[in-house]
Image 1 (cartoon, rainbow, N blue to C red):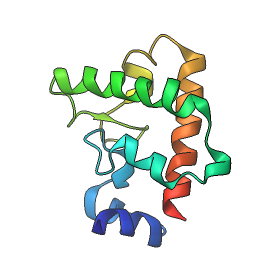
Image 2 (cartoon, rainbow, N blue to C red):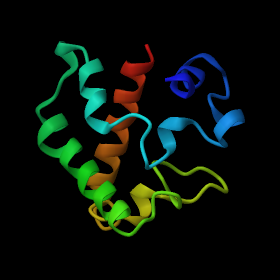
Image 3 (cartoon, rainbow, N blue to C red):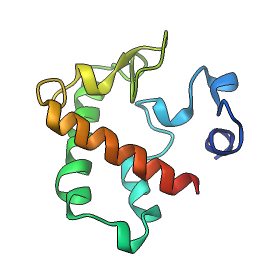
Image 4 (cartoon, rainbow, N blue to C red):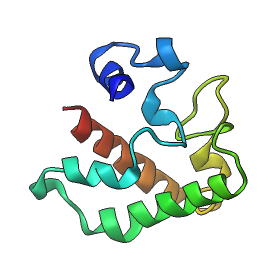
Length: 114
């Protein structure tokens, strides 16, 4: 994907083209499950499929069911919409799950960008 390549290779990522890195859009240029293919076997955690991925699916389904994908981002992107992790269940009312999933998603994105 051209925009993901821009995210990886350019210092500002695809921000110049899209207004934000493509990984930050809730309508996901990269499907959350695709990240699992890039995790080195020795870095995989049971939580990846038991907690992290199901929580992301639940949050994204909440956004999609309300047609909010153009207004909700996967992170705080100034001027681009609300942060999924602060606004949407199951993260909005569970700070420990929010922190766990945000951290792990960033790691997944890092693996994919290598």
